[in-house]
Length: 145
Image 1 (cartoon, one colour):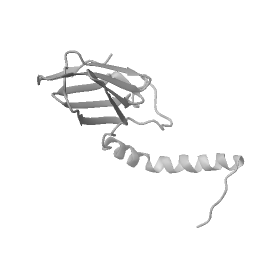
Image 2: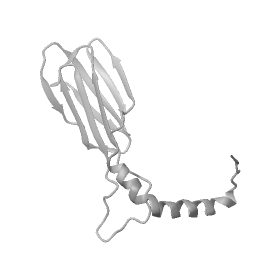
Image 3: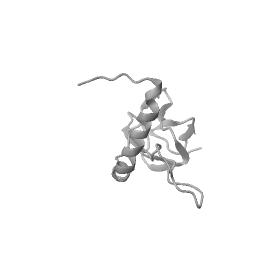
């Protein structure tokens, strides 16, 4: 195996080679992207006497695309990043590096959550859930603010 150092001057040639390959393999890569499984976002959980605070990294996701459901101690989070296909009428994609990313994460807490007092906030790509503890069991869907 040979290792070839690249210099600033070699980049245009490298980019041309990448673009040529992309023309041939882009349909196959797009098909794989459509069947891609959801990512598990990074997760932090902090606990106080009254509530859990959960933070999940979800870059590129709009708050309308986040679904949080709570059933007892079980918390489910699903989201999808903005659609890369959205464009104005008459436009066509010339080059694409961004893709649609789906996120899914489920976890179980030590205590049941009071879903009526639970809150969800999405800010700078980080979803923050404030989940007050509760003793009664029920199911709910949260609205992300």
